Length: 112
Image (cartoon, rainbow, N blue to C red; front, side):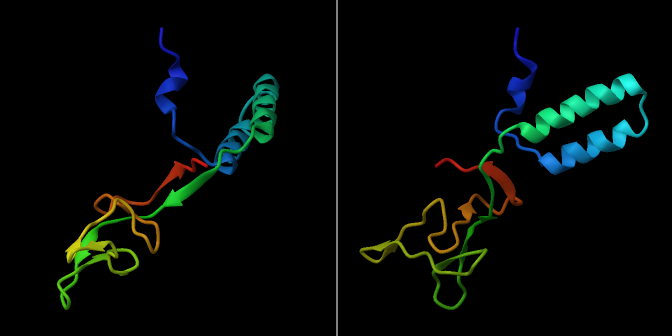
């Protein structure tokens, strides 16, 4: 049998948001439920924090003036040029934006 938490691998939530939700629910529950929520809140507060950062998303856009590519986030030129051919990387070398077509920013796990 699959573990129900496996489908959430790599998804991160705000500790503050989940604690706020439990705090709000605690106001409208009986004493027995409140004790369980308080224990859950203590567990969450003591749980180690994941190293997560927000990733910018963009795309390489063709410059109008010089007919070269630039980052859609910081407008820096694509700098990898070999034998007059411009090679585009998966990330902007200037701002670090992930070049995946401009999908909205989302947090990812920072792999150190």
